[in-house]
Structures are given as structure tokens and as C-alpha cells.
Image 1 (cartoon, rainbow, N blue to C red):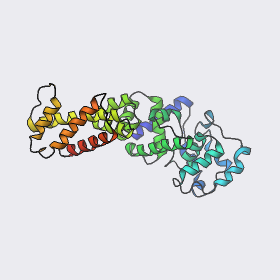
Image 2 (cartoon, rainbow, N blue to C red):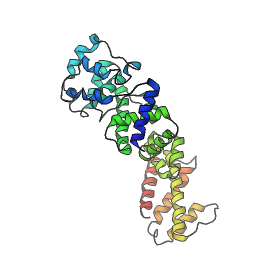
Image 3 (tube, one colour):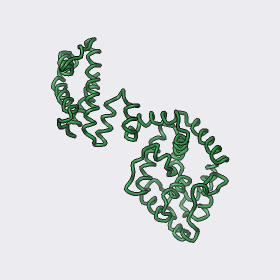
Image 4 (tube, helix red, strand yellow):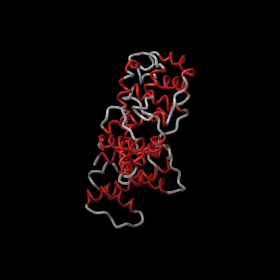
Length: 306
């Protein structure tokens, strides 16, 4: 995915939506004193809200000067060591502004390498896990964007903010590209339908997602699917054929593989997995978390022998 393509898309969308160019860098440069330890002054809020640089006032407004000016004097040194102690600092800022979106805007311009603007379209498209409160939810959002930096080969979280916002508004093929990326790195953030669409060739990865989500029976179904795929692949590789489909095919495949040199000493494991496979796919059979854990780990081990 080309980061420059998305940045240009973002600029195009802003021109179309607001009829203007954006100059985030001008705002960032004027806030260097905050990164050196100064407190956040009301004049800094006015710099951030400069409508000649971006359409701030079309979406947000700061509290009045009288409401926050004295409280802002407490922020001396808050921005120096971020992200150290960030949960407390973000919580304290939220206590002043009573609005996590405004807090996120401040953080994004003071530390664009670390933070992004809290945006509903981006939250929705990334399927961010809801937090116990606004601060926790914002941190969930930021942590995910920091992970995506590596995929898009950018160094700043604020650049991911731009990319995801552009995808959310443009949609089309861009949405599919983002979901492909999430399937690779953050499959937990996909819907069940998208998991099947983008990971149908890797049922073991789908199983791992559901195991982490603690949806054990569904995890068992997908690891069973991965087990059958593994057996069939190994039979073709080692024997050159797969027996005709019939009742008990899985048992037949296990017995065939147990006769090979490669799996001669792994028969016990293969038979245990066969039994777990049956428990996993039969609706009335109990399939526990320990069953799923053993199934996953043992199948991973057997796949590594390949």
C-alpha cells in the first residue's frame, strides 16, 4: 500500500469537502515549546484551531478562555515524556476539556509521532474495541494506529490518522486493501464475514482469533478445518494421493500418515487430534478451552515438521 497515494487522496478529499489546502506542519512547528516542558496556554489552543491551516471550527470549538485558562497552568511538563504515563495525562486533560476529541487534537499536534485525532469514521472502519471510558477507548485507537505504522511504512501515528480517514471517506477498493492489511496484522478487528473472506485459505489463523476472543467452540471448528486441510496436504505430499471420500476419511488419512517415516513417531498426537476434531465439529460434544489450546499448539507443531 503506497502511503503517498493515500496522502494525496486525503488532500483531494479535503479540497472537495472544504475547498482548502491543509497545513498541519505549520501548527506542529509552533508548538515546540510544549514538547520542551511549557504549559499549554490558551494561545496554543488558538494556534491549533487556526482555520487557515485546517477546518477546525467546522467540526469543533474550544471551551471559553474563562473556563480553562487557570486549569491549563497545571499542564507544565505534561507533554515532555509522553508516552510515559500517558493514561494519567490523557485522563487529566480530559478532566479539563470534558471532550476526548479535543484532547486528541491537542496530542496529535504536540506529538504527531505518537497520537491521532479521535474520529468516528476511523473508529468504525477499524472496529476499535470500546473502552471502559473515553480515555481507554482513545488509547485502544492509538495503540492500533501505532501498529499500522509499520504496514504503511510511515513513522508518525498522525500519518496513519490521515490514511485511515481518507479510506473511511473514499471507501471502494481502498476498504478492501485495508481489510487485507488487518487480516494480516490485526484479524481481531475484522467481522466474522471478513475473516472468512480474507483468511479462508488460513483456517488456523481464524481459529487463533476466536481462541483469543474466548469463543472456544468456533475456534475448535476452524482448527478442525485446518487439521483436515493439513492431513490432505500431507497425504498428497507423502503418498501422492488422497483416498476417495467416504465415512471415516479422517481416520483413514491419519492411519495412512502414521505408516510414513515422517509421522511414525507422531501417531499418538495425530490420533488425539482426530478425536478432538470430532469433538469440535459435533454440536453436542463438549469442547473446552484446554482442548482448543492443545489442538492449536499440537497442530502448529506438526505443521512445523513439514
